[in-house]
Image (cartoon, rainbow, N blue to C red):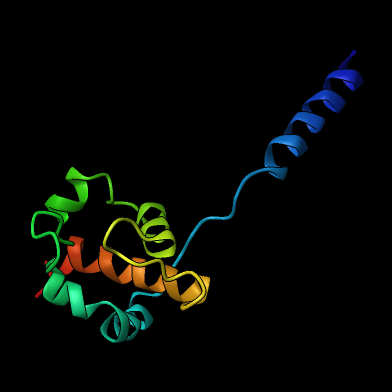
Amino acid sequence: MKKILSVLLLAIAIFTFSFVTPAIAGDAAKGASIFKANCTQCHLGGKNLVQANKSLKKTDLEKYGMNSLEAVVAQVTKGKKAMPAFKGRLKPAQIEDVAAYVLDQANDKGWK
């Protein structure tokens, strides 16, 4: 019985961890230069020149559910409304770096 239970638990663990997506991580320092080259036209200083109420400030990111790396990566990758998609223009690692920079500025630096 113990052997069957052990095999069953092992199978469940393998099945569970086989479908876990890798954690998204970015380099905020690299993201700063990518942001400057691609995003400051609309988001200089964390603002949003197209929709002022949807800035990159911490309160707005939280208000609109954009306060996670995954959410920012999705937004930058796919775009939305007036924001263009950067998939194809930037590599996935570059998008993750930009997302890390945005969250770093919003959370730790206050877009100063």
